[in-house]
Amino acid sequence: SQQGEEDPQALSIQEGENATMNCSYKTSINNLQWYRQNSGRGLVHLILIRSNEREKHSGRLRVTLDTSKKSSSLLITASRAADTASYFCVPYNQGGKLIFGQGTELSVKP
Amino acid sequence: DTAVSQTPKYLVTQMGNDKSIKCEQNLGHDTMYWYKQDSKKFLKIMFSYNNKELIINETVPNRFSPKSPDKAHLNLHINSLELGDSAVYFCASSQGGPNTEAFFGQGTRLTVV
Image 1 (cartoon, rainbow over the protein chains, first blue to last red):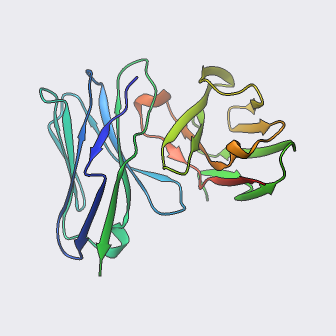
Image 2: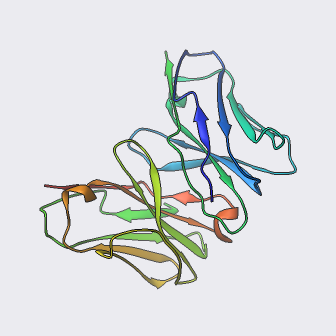
Image 3: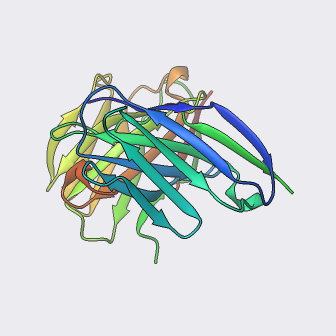
């Protein structure tokens, strides 16, 4: 099992700007998942991208995966104050566990 | 309807007490988990059950005992509570194990005084 390492640890932007968060991991994966946690709340699953996929979209979210570089990125376009949250990437390989890192703390200022 | 629900949401108790946190999921999932989130926001897996059977048991003091009466419920019982047990505890469930998305409860904030 492995955990993803999110970068940056904290990100502050203005409403309407795009936010990009990066994730690196160490060993091969079956899939990589992104979760969001609003302050004081539970985690919400955003996107799951499989190892044979390179890009996935969901509304204003775009996730890329580069297995050769062992990295992923999450792009939030036209950010809103409600996007303020911590974002976690979770690489998964068969037989392992979902292990969470420390996340990226995103602050979107109105 | 709440998919994964935990009770209570807040729990304040004295050192040495025994307490339980309950978790129920109405998603029909076969795998359930308990996670602990400390003050630095690290989420650590504690236990995982698949169809009522324990499949993951991380290095957790044996004061923590999970109980799964059926596959929709996974309760966490903690004996002899210590100050260091203060954290937010999250229950989660998934279908088919960790290879698919997990649904989390809202968390139980445990404060040991």
